Every structure is written in structure tokens, then in C-alpha cells.
Length: 160
Length: 202
Image (tube, rainbow over all chains, first blue to last red; front, top):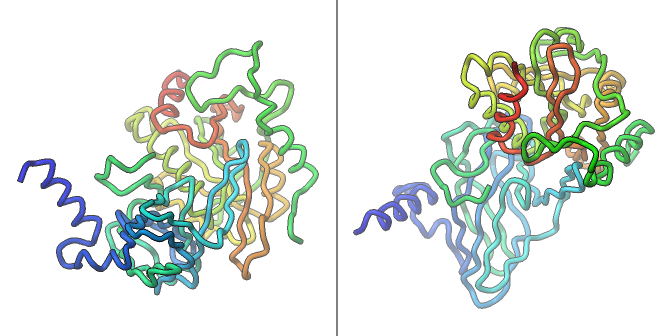
């Protein structure tokens, strides 16, 4: 296997929790979740979670909710820049067009883990269940990065 | 109360509106991308009386004697504030130990109701070992925000402690006398901020 392909495989494995976690765990019903990650955060506080969600199916779908055992509740949010004032707003759902993808990233759409019952520490993995209107539940593991990380470490493809 | 927009806050919102910075032709160009011209004829900065993450009284005078980077935000902010604090931390790291040590990074809460000194202590440690966290009574925080023309308002009631805050998101560069010498808009990169610091620090 050429080196770039090996590297891609390594990245895929890293993004899906390593060899121990079956790849299928992050793909269900035509929904694929890539590079799910979260920022380190303090207990009792909030954590931001980000990922790329791809709808490989021929029908549109929507991410309608998320939950995690580490958080009292998980909300879907959008950060809106209004001049130099930053506003965060809950969104009801995140639309996934057929054969389309959406990027959850700092400064845009993201998940907010609210009421953390323990700290999120860099280097660990945190389970989150995503619920889609059609695809149902998809379990993913967030790779916890630094508190102010802009993306997953080592993933230069992450847009800034 | 759904919005706690105070009169000073409103004045600031107007003041910080993009139009205030629209293509000034009679001002020097911004030093780095992301840097915005200091407002003309408007006092920026001044006295404040707050509490640091160890519970000690901290005033603007305690910041004197060194340069400082100041950011106003809140710890229940999972997206914007961590990005800006990381930018500050990375810029200081990029300066190297000698130059970086000459600049104090400071985070001022605009959410004193939730941001106790204890919470700030946990939070600031995530970003930089020298990051100072400041909070205080609602009145003292409002006074500090007013001095720096920071706009903030509660965006929604939320479930108990689940409310969100809207806030202006500038990084302020203060000189050792406490005067504001630079203003950086949200999204300024750590590289550009470090470049601005290298130019300013004699």
C-alpha cells in the first residue's frame, strides 16, 4: 500500500476510535460520522463537540438530537457572528441532504454538551449518541482535544 | 428578564457596530490582519475592581508594569471563547519564553452569576499556565465591561444555568501603563497576534 493510503487508513482508524472499535460503530443507515472530537472542559461546565457527518443515502435526513452519559443534555447550536458580537443559538435540527455532508466546526454548527458530570480531559474518548430522523441512532466516540483546539490533532484537512 | 442590555451596553453595541470601523481613510492601516483601528475620540480602558481566580482582589493597577492581553467572555461558552483564549495562549507561546513572559494573558468574565473564582480557576488552567481569570459582582463586571466598551447580554433564559450570552469578542492589547494599544477582532490568528506583539513590544 502506498504511503498516502496507509496514512489515510491510519487517520480513519484514529478517527473511529482505533482498531478496537469497529468501523461500523460510527456508520449506520447511510450516515457516516468522521473525526468526531470535543474540546477539553471542566466538570459542571459545557463542552463543544464537532465532527463531519455525511449522508451517503439517496434520501435527505436530519440530525434531530444527541445525548451523552457525561452531559445532562446535549444541544445543537450555531454560532452566529454579527459584526464583532458573537451569538450562539440553538438549532432544532441539522439538515443532511441526500449524498451530502455537513461539517460541525468551531465558529459554526456544533454540539454543546451541557452540565458535564465529569471533566473532559485531553486524550480520552467520550461516547455520544446521535439521533437522526430516518437513520435512527448512531453511536460515536469523541476524541477529546485541547480546550481551545481548532480541530483534531494531526488532521491538517480540518478547516480552520 | 430576557435581556439585561444596559444603557452603557447599548452605547457600546452601537459603538462596536461594523460601521464604526468602515473603511477609515484618515487612519493608519491596521498593523496585522484582524487588527482594527482604535476608536477615535472614545476613551477605551480604565479602572476596574474585580476578583481573580484565587479569590484575591484584582484591579487594573495590578496589571500595570507588564503588557497584557485582555479578553472578555464566559466559561459556559463552548465555541467562541475557547478559540480566542487559545489564540492568545498560542501567540504567547509563539513569542518564546523571554518575550512571552512580558505579556500577561487575562480572561474577564461577563457572566459573574455562574463564573465564580473556583470555576474560573478550573477553566483558565485549561488554556495557559499564566492565564489570569477575573470575575466579580454584577456591578463590578458591568463597570469593567463599560470601561472597555464590551457589549454583553443574556440571550435566553435557558433551563436554570443553561442560558447563553451574546458578547463582543475582541482581544485588547494593553501596555504596561494600562493604555489600550491594540484591538483584535474575533478570528484573528495566533500568528498575526504574535506578529503584532513583536512589533509593539520594545
